Image 1 (cartoon, rainbow, N blue to C red):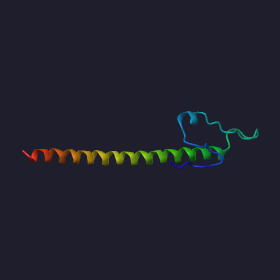
Image 2: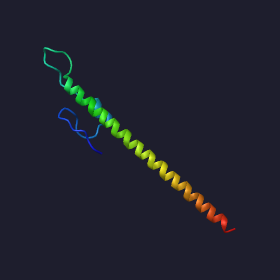
Image 3: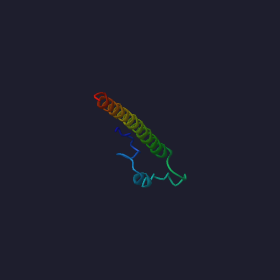
Image 4: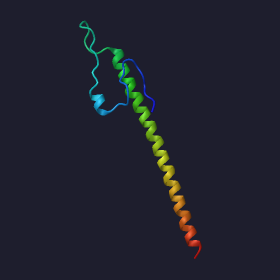
Length: 86
């Protein structure tokens, strides 16, 4: 799996525990809140990871469907081959 890279983002795969542990640096004392570029970087990382996992789920679901169809076809062929000898 490809990993999104940013100097502000986490490295490696995201897990629920790592997401809960994210601590963004605060802005200077003159402004309240978090730095916009840090928040944007984390949001982009979350969006990338979610899209990648959704893509992988779609691929796995399609492969699962393909394997089930092949198995059903094979079972039908074996059943029909067994019944044709009678």
